[in-house]
Image (cartoon, rainbow, N blue to C red; front, side):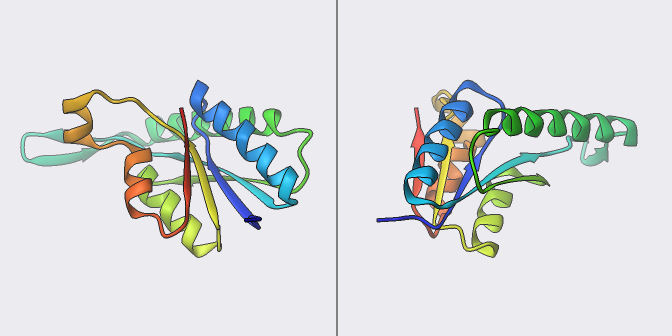
Length: 142
């Protein structure tokens, strides 16, 4: 089944590098468009029953770091044709799914994150969320 648009989630981890390599191989084989997305989330702190946003300078630091992560992905895809790099802010799983739907992506590739039992039960993982809610196939790289 040939794919036309492949979205790969990249966070700079070893598994996301492997996912990016697999996505590049698939898109070159099918002559598909490769979209590399990095989603960052600025922290919101809970203080008692109130939520407090972080100072603007810290938010800028998160964005600057996110840009450096995406720059790493650009370096890894330097020899691949038809690559688009996207930086988004938001909740990672939700943002990945929304981007995929809005842009007609027909395959999502991402690395797994081995959260241990209780942490995954309480927090969930990005890959688990994407797999559970995606309307298109998801390839999870281990």
